[in-house]
Image (cartoon, rainbow, N blue to C red; front, side, top):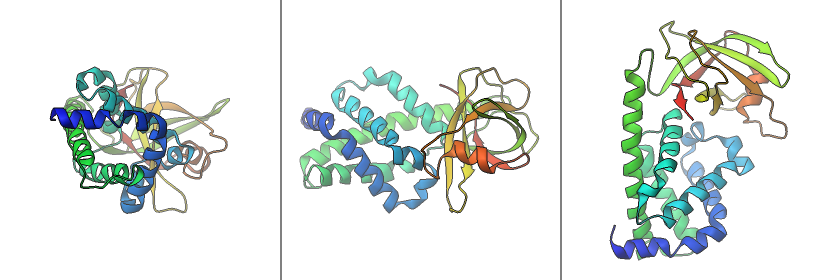
Amino acid sequence: MTPQHIELVKSTVPVLRENGVALTGYFYNRMLNNNPELKNIFNLDHQATGRQSRALAAAVLAYAENIENPSVLAKAIEHISTKHVSLDIQPDHYPIVGDNLLHSISEVLNVPFESELIAAWKEAYMQLAAILIGAEKQKYAGLAAQNGGWAGWRTFEVAAIESTETGKRLSLKAQDAQPIMDAEAGSYISVKIQVPAHDIQQPLQFTFAKPQTAGQYVFDVKAEPNHTEYSVANILLNNYNVGDVVQVSAPVKG
């Protein structure tokens, strides 16, 4: 990035502090309307509650504030790239996100798309995308190389269900009956399910309270009151039984 690009990105920091959530909310609506296939990747329940927009707004602001030295954001980049790997985000998703983000900045800030400001943000986004793609490539390779490991989604079936005080405890086993990697307490998997009455799949992360070493993954599912019909937890609790199948990503450290 040129010094001019850096200064232009930094000039948007006050606006991002004031209107970041409005910008990211607009961005998600724009992107999901233009690319409905991405509704299978982004958690629509988190969209409705504003959780996803708030998280992205904080990340965009932090990046703009530290655009001169992205290494300051190493911890955040580690967190984001790990979450992306758990959702099977791939390099070809980045141009779609970037195009919609740049148009959203232009439209929300009422700045011409051909302006120097949008050009500066394009360079900033490309820089960040390259960092994330590189980190995610290494993580995918590392997961696939482990004993019982894999990259992307793998089909599991519900092996057992127990009632708990707050919901249910699910045990999942790989449908192919092949080994699955162990997992530490505090690590998590993404579980992707079919939304009833919709042609949409939705993912959600579940954290392991205990080490996973028995060839199954066991985690608790708690009910989510006042959530949307896309709540993965509520769908699992109300619609899934022993023998039903879900898609699961390999465990990663939270």
